[in-house]
Image 1 (cartoon, rainbow, N blue to C red):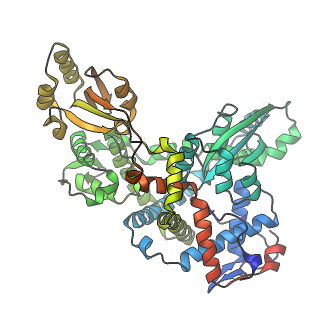
Image 2: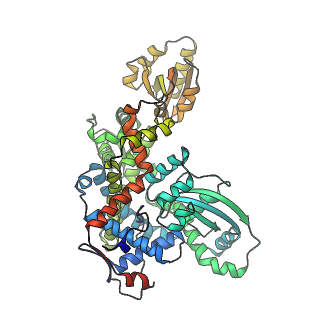
Length: 556
């Protein structure tokens, strides 16, 4: 490989769009089956590059230019190197990876179903277009950070929260040199110019405010609003020029409502029966340990019915099996009785939709199979990035310096020792509160009435636990006077009475104890450099031949 093939840009995040079902048929002056690059024994065809490049330009608004062509082609080369010229056996045998692959197959089929049965049938009236046109007379300026997954977006948001500079993060994540060097600045745009979800979030911000991660058509964005400028009334000529663009934006904005209407049409919630007691029992069993390690637990689940819809039964064992098959980021969202019930209903709706899709033959269509294949490749690359970062060794001296510079990040979490009584009936909870107010012994009442057996056996005492474990109640508990009765508080369909017995403020952890955590935090901050260095070494090991003439001269 000659020097001119060296990496020009950061290679990540890989530009794979989850919900890309429709293929873009691009008119090129060259045949689509012409190889644009040969990586070892693998060919990347001009048609594959054209589609990827078109999608990238469409998503970012960047104009065609030689630098971006090279960047996108390098991304595709990097993906080929990681997929075919590195050892991926550990990932391919990883249970979480297999779960996510299985989940992605269902999601690909459902995405195509939604495209055909919902999105393709959305219409926009002329009055709606004119209303949107009037709203587009205010321009805003914004910058953003882009991530392909919710997990990556949340990691970026956490870094912003602890004070990492927006411009610094933009320099780490963008492949495009302009966005990398200008802090993700997108310039001024008006309503209808950007992804609808992106616009809705951006227009809702105050100048200088930063959004939480926003799910868009192409991934996730964290947005910072820079400026607002109002313009005079627009002309009819401008309306005609913007009409098709506004129509597309309005259709996308109608997606959620149209999805909801479609679901209401094919799924009747009134026909679903839930057994709250059996769901409650399952949830209490699940909360004994982390949901993320659910496959390692031997719960005493049974054929007890949790839900039933149109003759299909969903037992505790069936629900546990379905949860076990979820990607880990979905498992970790099941943190309450209500979340578990919602997950069960989600399984019911998913089964209904998959049944419709399969009856129409959508699951066997080549376009769906191709989308599934592309999504699998994306998932593999996501796991590959994590593996590269995780196995990279960083010198102890750098880890220790990072620890000293960020001591607030490596302190033990505040802890609480709380006593609880959990019941299922509001009137019973009120009666217990009355007994407590009149001198009743909390521990005795917990033993007698609380449904959470493991704490009831200990007089309701939960023992010291991290503050974060108490979720939405953590601030209330932390600020509560010691031994003061709290509640009853409704938590989904159960009711709790609580008493804070003691609190322990967090303290800086010993470096030797928290060294692994410090190392992971440092790797996260240096993640892109670690991955880029790793891939550059792969470039040196594999013969890569780029057709420079085709890359430079081909036209859409």
